[in-house]
Amino acid sequence: MALLHKLRRNLADLIDPETDRQRDAAPASQAADALVLPIREVPSFGYADAAEPSWPAPSRLPPPTPEVNDPLAALSYAYRPSWDPARGVIAAYLCVPTLPEASGTARRAAAALPCRDDIPELERLDFATLSHGIGVAEGFVHEKRRLLITVPVRFETLCVAAHHRRYVETLRTRLSPEAASLLVVELVGVPSGVPEALLLEISSPLRAHARAVIARLGPDITDFGQFAAARIAAVGCDLAEQNASELALMQHMARFSRGAAKAGIATYLRGISTLSLAAAALGAGFAHLDGDAVALAVDQPHGVVQFSLVDLYGPPVEG
Image (cartoon, rainbow, N blue to C red; front, top):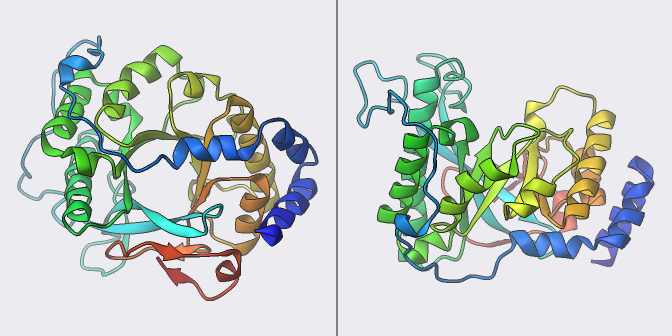
C-alpha cells in the first residue's frame, strides 16, 4: 500500500500538480466509500414507494419478443473485471453485451456499435441486458458468491417514461432482495449539464431496487454537484470511447477526479488499454479501474480475485 500511495502522489504531480493538494482537502477514501457499499439486504420496495416519473407516455415500446431476422439474435455477453486498488481485489464485473463484428465471423464487438443508428434496437438491447444481469445476480445468490454485477443502460432509454416504468418494474418484480444487493445500474451517455431534478427522477426509483446507481460521463466534465445531490454512487468515463492522446487523456483524468473529489463522489475508469494509463489512473485516485491493461474480459464471472499493484505489471489477468 505504501508503494501504491507513493506512485499515486508522484504520478499526480507529473500530470497535474494540483491533484495532491485537492486530495488533501477532500480525502479520496470518502469518495471510495460511496461506491464500495457494505453488503446488505435490500428491502422489496413497491413502485408506489418511489417517485412517479412525470414524462408523457411514448407512442412505442420495445417489442417484448424477437422479430424475424432479429439483429439481436446472436447476442451474447462478456464480463469485464473491475479492480478495486484500495482493497486489492477484483470483486465486480461489468456485463458487456456483444454481437458478431460481421456476418459469419467469430470476432465480436460491443453490441451497441452495430446497433448505434437503430434507437429501437438499442432500447431492446437495454432491456435484454437487464434481464441477463438479473439472471447473473440471482445466480450469484444461488451459488453464495459475493460478487457485484454492473448492468449498463442508456440514459436516453430511461428518459422515455414508459421505458423507465418498465425498467423499474422489471427490477421490482424479478430481482430478489438478496440479488438486488449485488446489482449495480450504470447510466450510460449521461449528457453534461443534465438537471439535478431529472437525475433524481430517473435514479431514485432505480436505487430503491438495486445496490447503487452510477453514471458514465464524458471525460471533460468537472462539475459533479448535481450527481452528488442526486445520490449517484460514483461517476466515471470510458477511455475506449476517446480518441485523444495519452497525455490529453491523463490531463482529463486528473481534472475529472479532482472535480469528483470536491463533490465527495467516487470515481471509476473504464477502457484502460495501456500500463501508462493505468498508472495515471492510480495517480489520479480513481477508485475502480477496468480495461485490457488491468484484466481481460471473461466468458463467466469468476470469484473474488486478489489483485495488487505487482499483478498490474505482470501478464494480463483473466478476472
